[in-house]
Length: 260
Image 1 (cartoon, one colour):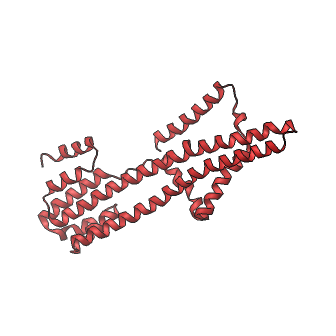
Image 2 (cartoon, rainbow, N blue to C red):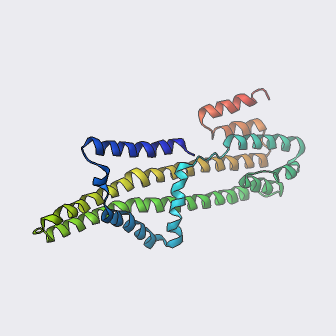
């Protein structure tokens, strides 16, 4: 569970409720079924019109990622690459064949298998970067989908506003209809703004951050695999790969191996 996302969600809801109560309103003042149908339901089905059934239903799985913490194991992978580099220098590239079969990281395993098979460095880089590119493309599609919903929601909010105003103008002689129609006109905009700015855009930002973090780790693995293939000194590999880590983590890794 991502504690920051949970606190952000609960805190944001609390601030909205606090704003409602301190302004003299009640929660029920802002509960309106027609506005919900127009903004939430309308924008969701418009998203389905754009992406299709399967992809649209999958958007909820994407959004749930905001509440999970993903550890891509950068430091552990660096340790493993350093270990493999030392072993390859001592015993040769072929000595890695048995150990690499036990790797949990399939991306690194695939790269090392290409090294053991004697594949040219440029071909290894091309294949691994292509897989990374395909991963980014898949992630990008999900990010675009959430972004599309965040843009549709305010649009349907404005559509609901227009709808409410039209209904109000056509029934001005019936004073009992003015209030409900004005509520639809304003609350749809309120719902659309909350969906876009409080829910969808922040969650999309989390997906972007996760994609960048995973991409950085895979780029580090590519450089490590190619360094092993080139027969670089393990110390060179260590310094090169440590540059992919945040400053404090980088220094901790370098200090760990400084006596080697």
